[in-house]
Length: 84
Length: 197
Length: 240
Image (tube, rainbow over all chains, first blue to last red; front, side, top):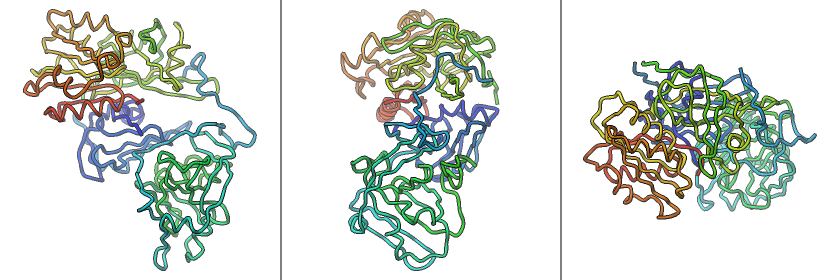
């Protein structure tokens, strides 16, 4: 199935982060690779948004939208680096 | 602060009194994909049930079919608000697969090829309530819909009908699977609209 | 971190809406509270139906700078839920909820010091953020050598043709545009791309935008040709 990339997360993640996370780097808990969030694979045709590591396809993050709230999950990111 | 958008209605959403609350009837079959589809050859395909006692129970593609495939006509309900009514399926009842399984555990984690998981109470899988399904709408299950085989649990939201099913693991607690960890309801009864935490 | 134009929800009013190609429409939005945006950024448009149902889609902005008049180009997807509405139903005077400016990664700014040339590769409607970059480059009189390789089915399907021609005519900001008309002279290939791109030795900064399959193919070719993966930034649109 087709996917987008982490640029598509700029809008949804703006509800959680005060800054644009697409230029932040994250370490994948699956393969250990450190990559810019904009390069992750983003699947939007699911029961929620699923963000996967471009290297190993491990799930980095999930976004589930309910009518009145949003759930952000980060099962596969051990840390995010943000530069000032 | 949402502005109502003049003239926008979204896709036509058809109602039907047989639908659970918040659901809309569709005639196509939407594909929901959370990642790349795993490719599984029926030659190497295996289904396994693991309980806390005894060795795992395994079936090859041929062995599971030998247990007896039946026709099922049922409605399915996706948490993303679409439902399909009177869908034709073919599969093997989980009652046949659990015949020789001994367990004191009450919950099951379904595991799929590709890593997907979802949790279901054991008593909602038995007594004619679920199947390992191979065909839908008269065709072998396409890969994008979970083929070659998926779990079929029509009484719960369809995220519980795990695509690319590989096995079931008995567990003592109702541990959350993939979507349940991400925000979806542990149980998922469409008639009680159990969608989210 | 540098907080240029932090993302927020705004209400935009449609000032212009006209055909851009046989399947796409150019839409100009007046967003009085817009903080400005960099070239390459996008916004999310959210539509709300009378029963509360909402649908949100991302659209790249063809303009940049402090201007509060934003230009978008929307391509109609045959089975789309949002694009047919924006292309056929949306009228001048209508209001839209928009969220932005979004995206700090797929951005080109004229004030950044780099001697590397810039290679822009577009597939279909993927040209929109690259048009913003070309226009920003021309408006700033920036001397960085720019090349745009624009793959599109036929000449009728070109977006922002006049704006690209104007940018390419700039005396101070060099821009070369190569059109690849896939239905006329054949699809873009690795070899035709290599022929019109900057050489590897020039170490260009590359931006690729378009449908996912196009972006993946082009990015793969660039790496095969010898370009460094870290010099390539990609933005995938939905669709085939």
